[in-house]
Length: 101
Image: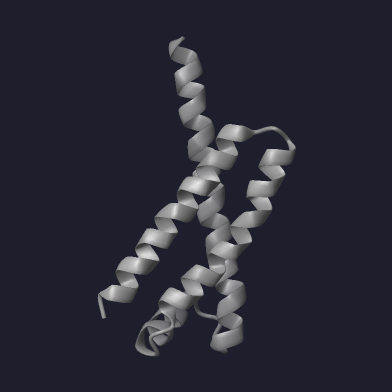
């Protein structure tokens, strides 16, 4: 019984990590449309100064649909749940960033 609970937490953690990585990759892709820079740190600074950082983060979350869909197709429900949790965390962070200005 205890091993099953540990495996579920591990699967959700893997899904959340995949979701955050997919979001970061999506941010890099979409930031190329707004900012013509290749330095990740510089992208954040320019995006924050131009007040588009929350938009780039939100657009990056679109890429989470791919691993979410693939996990559901392979019947990896707990990993898909982890991707969903990562997406919700990113959405909350985006709202906080939006209202902190």
